[in-house]
Length: 198
Length: 198
Image 1 (cartoon, rainbow over the protein chains, first blue to last red):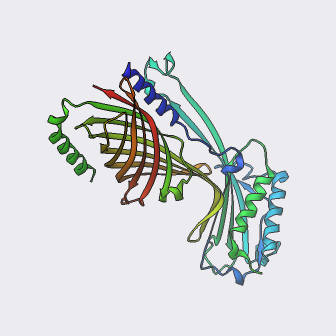
Image 2 (image 1 turned 90 degrees about the horizontal axis):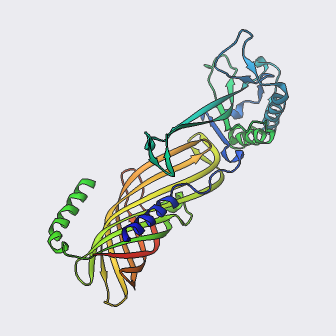
Image 3 (image 1 turned 180 degrees about the horizontal axis):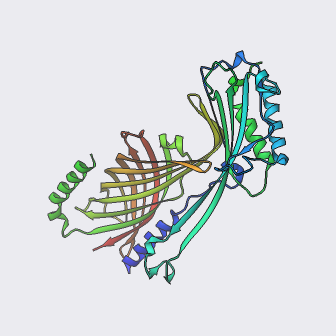
């Protein structure tokens, strides 16, 4: 009887410690903003930039009709937010790469991860958990979206390479949330004080 | 280090076995509340209400017992949105930090008095396994570290009769610096039942 009580207490102790408390509750809790830059590039000596009018959607393949682009419904607000941040930092937007010091290239892609789980502890027809059952696999998936912004000098004498890269990443919620995207773009420029040329 | 520790323990047990064969034994299951200290508090600083201790002791004489002490504490902390910079790279987001602590001790306890209420002091030597996760976005950094561990404790046993008693103690797990991790500490308060096993 004493051994049964000890086993019961031990089982209760194990059960109480099986899952993590807390954790993310909202999609925004998982949003990340990453930036990196070339510390040898003199941003203060530049003042103009240009960018394409569309945002490339990287899918891994180019169809017969060429690359895919983000719908203008969403791309317009994203590009406007980028322009607003660059202007606030003192940059002047130009129409063509020939007139500008830097070209800012935005791109997006999505990534779907499939999580597969098989109860290997119950690897055969065996008493496991609440009763006899045949083990079955379970699978779930989640999709993340990433937007990358890259700045490349337009100077022909310089080997083309990125002098500033920003990446924003988050869990797709199934509906476009302009607030999350705008907040992440603002954060990317906020954590890049070296872009301030005023 | 771990091999020499276990060889030492095996030798000590070998010398004590003749005296322990006829000895009374005690088994205890305790609920544990942990207060993180040092570097552990920097990573996951919330007081832990998720923990337990399992203890098995053999009585050497009327005042001294020794045996094993195995425990678990889970420490968590949700850090608010912040930016983390390393060199030219900056990453912003919310961090969810988890520390799973598994202290494993060989300890001895000296009990004062012979009545139903018996305070005691003890010291344990062993090892601590720490499984640490730092989650940001959909990504996690997982670290596994072993530490040399010394744990002094103070507490009391209260005999309720019929071979059952209440055990309460305060124990400080002092985990020493390892090759890949800093020193850390856990002040735990443990309460549970003590069973005499003849």
